[in-house]
Structures are given as structure tokens and as C-alpha cells.
Length: 138
Image (cartoon, rainbow, N blue to C red; front, side, top):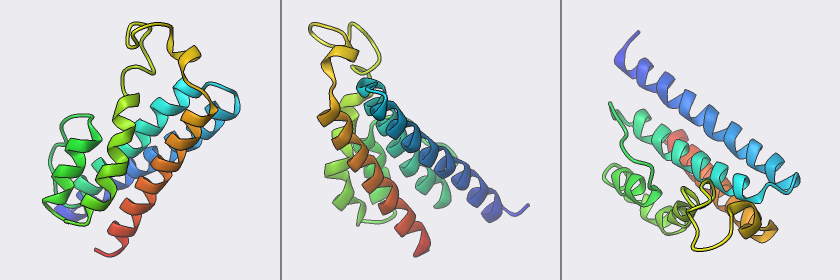
């Protein structure tokens, strides 16, 4: 397998999981598991941008912050500055959605609601669509 084929395969696996995480977020939100849906949206967007970086030749992708991952992607395609300002809104869902001590008071399942998960789903879908569009133009 050529290096280009290996990169394409790795990228494809990350994008496939990104799509699956977004679908799982829809199901979680429908079941009123809004904190989980928000976390899954962060994961979906993170995996989408990582998939882009792998498609463009990255050997390793480090970190979970979409702000940082989009910065890395901007080194390859400056148009990522368009999605970065929106994508990084999902970074706030990385820890507080999962840990009872991640919020100043209360627990995640009580702190997140339909508005939160709905907005997170919109953002994650936008990030995934943006990445897929960029990859089609390669």
C-alpha cells in the first residue's frame, strides 16, 4: 500500500467514526442525554479535523482542543479560520459534560439541556461538512 493510500485509509476511518459519533449525538439528545450528546459532538468534530490532518499527511495528531486542531489545519488550508471560531465552541464540552466535578456546582446531566445539545449538533455537523468539502477539493 502506498503512503498516499495509507493516509487516505487512516483519514477515512477517522471520518467514519466522526459521522458515527454525530449520529450517536442525535440519539443521545433524542433520549434527553444532553450532556452526552454535547460530548459526542465535540468528539465528532475533533475526529473530523483529525481526519483532515491525516489526509493531508500528518503522522500524528496531538490534543483534543478544536481550537488547536483547527490551527494545525490552517497551516495547510487557511480557510479553516472560517470554521475555527465556531468549532472551538465545542471545546467547552470536552470535560464538563463527563465529570461531576467538571462544573462549579451540580452534575452534567442536570446542567445541559436541549438547547445545548441542539446547538452542539449543529456545530458538529457544520465542522464535518466543512471538512468533507475541503477533502473533496483535494
